[in-house]
Length: 259
Image 1 (cartoon, one colour):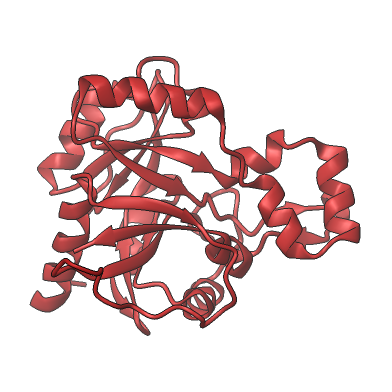
Image 2 (cartoon, rainbow, N blue to C red):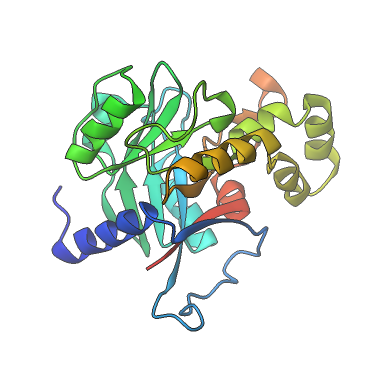
């Protein structure tokens, strides 16, 4: 479905700004519906709040529906959402593009390379699988897309690979897997969900050092937050007890664009 001209303009503004340095990551733990969108003081820019790195039923590891995701966008008052399902023909073909309520949905993909995982968006057609990051970034750029290093904690080379526009400096899914399972379980069972979300919002010193190193060789190189929302983390494994649903994850971590 082709986007109207205004939506294409909004998408271009968001992606164009993400390609530069006017983006930043916020971990806010805010109350739903509490945030306004004023101009940034002393500038002509607005602060647009969004989420990058989200999975749905179009990924093999999530059952999330558009209705659940759209409801979470309303709760978190998101201006934009970048869907990055694990790439299949269906995820690119059937992904929702354009306005859903007050949120602009963009379709991208989480794609693997021999060096690490990339987030590429927006996309109109699938990228070829398991190529070098520079080739994936080139293919994405041919569609007007951007490419970011995802899961920087697992990246097996310097982050500033040719063609990349930036990197995740926080990934909530990685945080949930590394924060210590017993402590995470205890937090989930006995403390407010806000405490759990704070626990998995890890600031990894090694990732931040790798990002700083990349910034010395490539500028602009934009930091983004990796929500990595799946709505599939279960306290009791196969017995259920899903935590960190879309609403919780969207309210915990956001990426802001000044445009």
